[in-house]
Length: 195
Image 1 (spheres, one colour):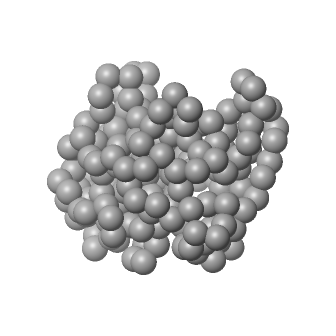
Image 2 (image 1 turned 90 degrees about the vertical axis):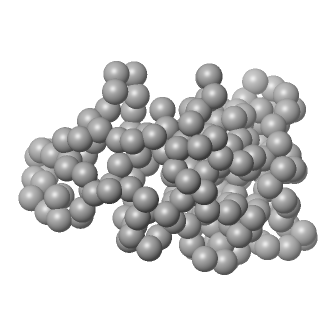
């Protein structure tokens, strides 16, 4: 539901393999979406189901105890949900993939740093044809993308910062191109990137 918190790694040093520490106190009906290791000088970028993205500095969050709840990272419109939280890598791209198989990469420098808790800016132009955002990942041009549909279809494609590949370099407010041709009723279920 768009909340975030920061805890020192030392708080997790005594966690047993049999379980133990609660990393975040969640509100009823909410669930943990992502976790990452970040330094205070890092920035994070969060992307929503409805295609909004907000980028802000990790040091805008104060360090909290494990049992505390989060603070607002992004203000969500009614019906919107958080889809991803990634640590920003300089000179990298934001890959956005929609439920109907459309996607694109956009240089992260097109997403200016903002204050935490706002509506963010448009990461992709969504239409009935594209569907909502299924995944958003920080990627570099030497990585591979794998997409899996809910019906079990799998594709892999290189992430390239040129216009010659399946995944195109495009500006923030564009809808992307079809990168996974899905059967009727099928949807993108998961996306992964690897070297």
